[in-house]
Image (cartoon, rainbow, N blue to C red):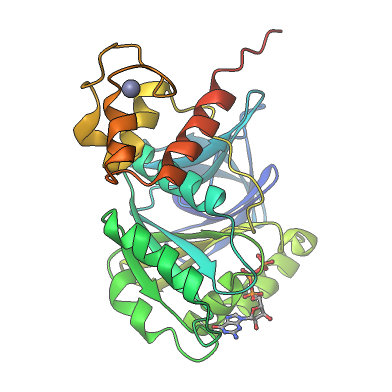
Length: 291
Ligand SMILES: Nc1nc2c(ncn2[C@@H]2O[C@H](COP(=O)(O)OP(=O)(O)OP(=O)(O)O)[C@@H](O)[C@H]2O)c(=O)[nH]1
Ligand SMILES: [Zn+2]
């Protein structure tokens, strides 16, 4: 007999699927297909006590993933917003922030930038945050150790995914939003014998009836190989007014005369760091891999 379910944890090739009655099953996919993620709506068949097989995955409204030339990894499905967690300390990689923004734009998901640990002053980080606010991104300052109240209105009605480098405070945010979540997850994992995977797993937590938050392990790298050149240009929001205005329609925006993007950088409409990151991703993606 098959049941509808929601993937609430993904670790390697195993998934915890929540059934409508609240039961959690430890599931595998049929065959070699392993591209499911937390947030996926699935149909499962029970195979044993607490175990099942994922038969079908419902069409996703959104899909967030990263990829390199060799493989791609689904990070989360059906999310409506991505919360990128930065901190005043340790310093964050702007490259990673931008890759998250590009992935969000390409997937059509709203991105929110959170600067955590604002109790530790860092004028440079604040200045950076303002630069992204100027691009039109919603930004928020946070001291997650003290309170995450400011986050709550933002989360209501959304399925949000938290991403960020290690050490920025993702766990602190989750623990503060859901003091019970971790221990409950631990309990379920022990029952399902997936305890050893809990720290590397992606988890979905329900905040209320129509809000949830997905916690992913700390990101080190974020390849965007699946994004083509046109998508990449549009993923840099401030490029949009200038796209199509270069002299050459195959302009690479590196050296060409009458390049609208380079002119916009000179005029201050595009931050030079953003063009640099664009070029970096573009060059990675244009490397041909054979075999
Ligand atoms: N001062 C200060 N420290 C914080 C704040 N939020 C988190 N921390 C501390 O920062 C450190 C890292 O926080 P975590 O929540 O473990 O970070 P994480 O992003 O989950 O890191 P990973 O588990 O490695 O992915 C911990 O020592 C926290 O106590 C904050 O708002 N202010
Ligand atoms: Zn150009």
